[in-house]
Length: 321
Image 1: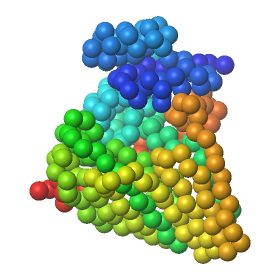
Image 2 (image 1 turned 180 degrees about the horizontal axis):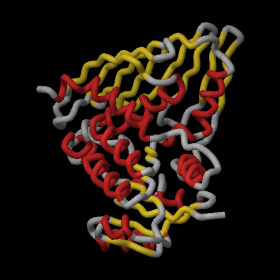
Image 3 (image 1 turned 180 degrees about the vertical axis):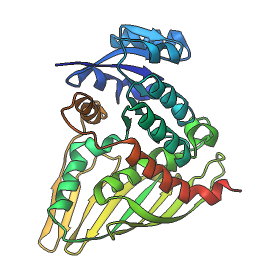
């Protein structure tokens, strides 16, 4: 069995537990090289994780003949640049979410990978987690009847402006872009693409320049309707999605470790499905399987771009100021 040898560009915090070890533990996969602009930090990561090579220059990693595929784990401002360079080298691309700074950049990445004949995957890893596969299975067997609408509510508190995640020049927006993208992509996975969207964004607390509150309404191509509110200047953390059907509803969290709750006229049923230790590993396995001709990854550049397009539409007026 052939092994896919991976290189990581940007071996920061997300790669310590969430993703990095997944490349080492997935079947048919091996992590052979990492890169950070500070080569000493790349060396430190490599030695701690048992990775044989480290670089301070992305081009050297991309051109390394022992690297078969590249995972881009930098902030969004650098996704397009590294994706285009990796595609030019003829290597498959796996890029962190959100896919890029905006939908236009996503389109450039898709075109470059298509021209180079290489696949493009996006780290919306909830598409491969058993918990959300259970939600999808419940919907497909019509456990709540025909789906009518979905509501999402996510609020919490981030004070201060020290994180790149709330610097629009680096992240493309605020926490709505960083974490709200996961919910929007998950809904795309569960209910199909969003066909129309309208939204409002603002900044109520003035902790940073990015938006800290977003409300949105959407209609899915399937005929399902939806709405969401994301606010990051409130008193506690809450994260819940409710999919309501003709015979009941399914409630679940995008991020919090809580059970899936199915409520119908017959009663309530709960499903508690734990996440794996390395939360990206199931999606990484689907990518490796696809590259080896043994399966299909559910999170691609095409699906990732749809989520960016929705967020662009919601934030357009806020960033037009």
